[in-house]
Every structure is written in structure tokens, then in C-alpha cells.
Image (cartoon, rainbow over all chains, first blue to last red):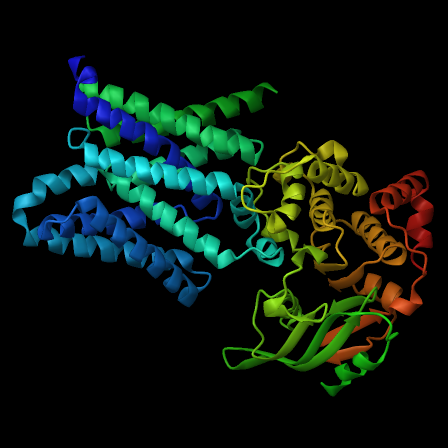
Length: 269
Length: 274
């Protein structure tokens, strides 16, 4: 239990509380726009950036972030080339990211252990710089969503109607991509690059089951995200488990419970 | 092709041109979809657009609202080139209903209110006046009691009323409808068209409607198309053919219509066919 009071654990908890808000919020917009897989792609690409960061001795999260933003623009470009086969561009960029990451891994054998903590997440490696970066990203994301929630709703619900009502749809598409890249690149140290997409998509999947309104779905994803992150970190800390895996399995458990509960409600009514 | 040019010369000149197209062409992958189309829609005109699949109906509509760029030619809305047009709140747009994801978590009220989101300022919250507009639009469409329902739970006809309410919340001068009755049963279609006609006759609204419903288009806009371009056919009722009395309160007048329809449903449906 001492681990819970230790400084590194409390840093992880604060970091977790912050991404527990931002990741599910961005994920909600992505899922509703049928871009669930984009989180996976951006996180795999940002791992290549993290590896490059270690190789050249630059703050890995920053390089990861640059890679993730570049990838989100590349996806937009490719998406236009393939029109309705949008998921094709997501698959291509994702494998490109993994390929690049694997090349960079083999080039710098010394940092393999460090990179490991980015792949699966590690609460032991979060330092105070990381915390400041996560805090900054959280502020940016929350201000952007709070000030633009109406516009983001309209664009998510009906992109054509949004354009006809005079919204700069391109600007908002770029905004969503960049914010997603920001959230993912700061989340991978806590949840892990291989698992971060679950923190984006599963709360949204839960909200599709229970939320009646958009307002409710926003509240739902934040509550579920926070619950899973805090409970997951505590369980992982106490029993010395991988934090990312614990958080994701908790999220899936919540989703299953909701699905079962909903069936129960339907059968009962 | 040149036939469509006739349309520019008809109609009363005192009315403002709401939509004007000059030599508009559109090609997709070297295939010409629309070629050299010119026409003008005047205030309070009703244009019904008919064509087979692939005739370019949706393409034309998307060009008019600025979602697609024409390969050549100029499109103007209220006299302003479409790429520089700013007064989008003057246009109500009702998309094809089949684009809706039934699981989308949004209530009817949220969807209708979103009609106001395009022009709202940064950080501006919805105020009392906005909620009043929403109430009025819901009321006009007779869907007050559905406002807290999730949009995906509604029937096709009800969803179409929601989208019409969203388009009407800004009191638009131009209403664009893209196949508004696809997948809706005949009776609901009839009452939907009845409502559209009523709005055209009693309110200062210009209509552009793409439809596959030949009967409705012909009975209201005339048997023969007034113009054509390739496979696109334009049926038109000009502003000077409509009654001149214009009521300002749309919600009130549609409520009256609804009550009238509900009390003598049979009569309205039959008498409506001309």
C-alpha cells in the first residue's frame, strides 16, 4: 500500500486524472465520426517519434507529438485520395509507423527498456516535466472543446449541414486531428501506445449504450474514463500490474456490464 | 442544354434572384455530369428537380450550397458568389435522411438547436431567445412531445420533421431539400408535401427540392418540365403564380394547418391532389 503514497505514484495519478478527461472526450468525437481506428494509428506513429527522440536525445514525447500531428495530416490527405475507403489510409499510416518504429528500435539497442514503457505504459517513469506537458495539453483540449462544443457537435452530427450553415469544416477537421494527436502523445507514457486507443474509444462505446443526449454522452465518457483510470492505477499500483492493461480491462468490464444491464432492462420491460 | 437558359427570362423581374447559375459545368473523372447549365431562381419560386440516378441532382445541389466546386461557371446565392457567400443563416438545408446514424446520442431538441450553431459566436452560449426559436420550430412541425427523444428512436417521417425544424429555426428565405421523403410511407409523404406547399404559398420562402416523387412535383409544379439539362428536369412554379398574402408567423400558421389536417385528414389528402 505504500506505493499509493509514493511520489511517482501520485504523479501517475494526477497524469491519469488529466488524460482520463481528455482522451475519452476526443475519442467521443472520433467514434461518432466513424474514425475509431485513428487513435491506434496516431499512437503507433508517435511511438516511432518516441524512439527517434531517444536516438537523437530529444524529449521523446515532443518528437512523438510531431510524428502524430504529421500522421494526422497524412491521413487527411490519403483519405481524400481514397474517398470512401477512408480506413485504408488509416491502415497504411499505422503500418508505416510501426515499420519506422521497429527500424529505430534496432538502431538504438540501448534504449529498448525505455521504449517498452511507452509501448505498454508505465507509472514508474512519469516525471514532473511529463506532468507539466500533460497539464498543458489538458488545458488546451478543454478550452478548445468548451468553447467549440456546439460547432464540434454540428460537424460530428452532420458534416454537410455544418458546411451549409457556414462552418469552416476543414478547420474543424484539422483541429480535431491535432487535438487527438496531442492527447495521444501525452497519454502513451501512462496507458501505453498499444492500449491508448481503448481509452479513446471504449468510454464512447459505453456512452452509445446509455446516453440519450449528446450532453449526457459527454458526461458519461468523462465519468467512465476517470473511473477506469483511477481504479486501474490503484489496482496496478497495489498488485504491481501493468497500468495500461489494467485500465483497459476495467474499461472492457464496464462495457460488458452495461451491455448485460441493458439487456436485463429490455427483458424486464 | 441551351433550353435551360429560357428560365432566366421568365418570372417577375422585381423579385430578387435567390440562386443564379451561369454556364455551370461539372465533370467527374473526365465524365461530364452537368454541362453548361444556366438558370435563375427568383424569390418565392418553387423549383422541383427531377432526374434519374446519376443525372446529377445531388451534384447540382451540393454545388449550389458550396459543398462541391463546379468545373467551370459561376454560382451565386442572393447575388453573391457562392465561395464568398456569408449569410448562410438565410438558407435552410434538409439533407437526405439516410445519412443519419441511428445510434447517434442526440436528442431532437439538440438537433433542432444545432441549426443555430453555424452562426453563433465563439464562447457564446445558447440564450433564452434561441430556446424560444427552438420551441417555435418544434411546435411548427408538431413534434413538441418528441423533443427529449433520441433522434434515432424516431420514425422516418418524424426524423424528416426534425430536420425540417432544424432548417426552419433560422427563418430561412431559401429552403433546399434533398429527396426529403425517401423511405417514408405514402401517407406521411402526402402530409409532408402538404406542409411544404403551405409554406410556399403563405410564407416568403423560396424552394429548391430534389425529389423522386413525380406525382407530387407534377401536381404542384406542372406536368411538363420548364427546362432541362441532360437528364436533369426542372419543374417550376414561379413566384407570381402563388398567392400574395404572406404570413409572418410560420409556427402559428403551420399549427393552424396541422389542426385543420388533423380534424379532416381524409378531405385534405384527397382534395390536395388537384
